[in-house]
Length: 192
Image (spheres, rainbow, N blue to C red):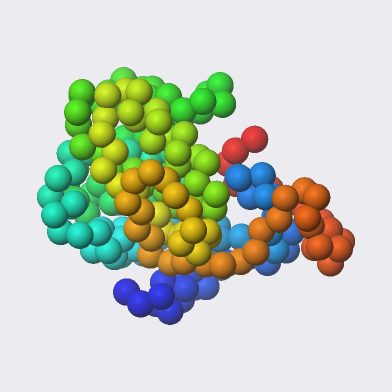
């Protein structure tokens, strides 16, 4: 899939939003990619997951034992990437603000893990999820995401592949431009 094909999928699902958004990273933006909308179609989710898997080097794909994704945003795409790789897909949750494996999920010592996210902006959630997997005994080989909002600047400590690099500006609380501050703030993400 080309970048334009991917953007077309987001547009077709009304998943590219404009307004004033609080991102999960805590930053503000005039644009929000609602991946849950683009992934609500099983056919579209499967197509995007397959395209994401194809972005990874073949040698990497062959090494992966399991797919792990952080809840909430990574659940659907993580499951679909697991399906595309024919590997189990589990997820991490934050019941107390820190990522944990729950629901009887386990990672065996040394198991080769692919981390899957929907959107990466600052990489904070990804780095926290990678650390949780390491603490559980896993070896994170790489991370993939539908969208890299850092435009290629994020460092996760592992190889990182995305379908789409977006460079929509985002702002700290003290940097919000007046025209954005004048728009009502919404927080569409899953983190409190």
